Image 1: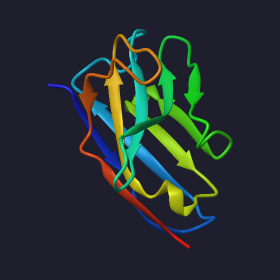
Image 2: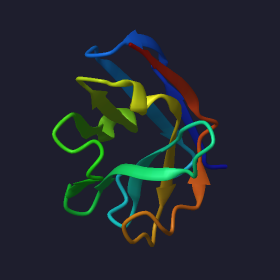
Image 3: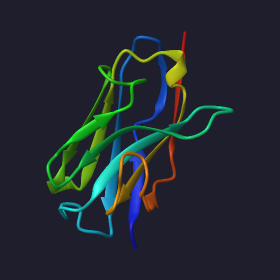
Length: 123
């Protein structure tokens, strides 16, 4: 059974930093055809993709809303993907999810999802 567990959420003031972790189990994390993505859903808004990393070539991708502030990385030995979030602002508030998929394109094709972790940024 594939499981993704996010951790590292919490409350922070604007300008602060947080690091999220996504621990994966139940599949071969270093399989070349997997990608891991981070998504978020702000109150009253649709879920949006914000970052992803491809296992095959390590290629990363960021949405315009987080580019230059967030950094995605992976530790394959630990089956864990991280999202370092710097210079947070109030618009970053929401529930953050990690997801995994084999046949993904940008923000689609993710089959497995974590339960989400809340991030609240106060001004």
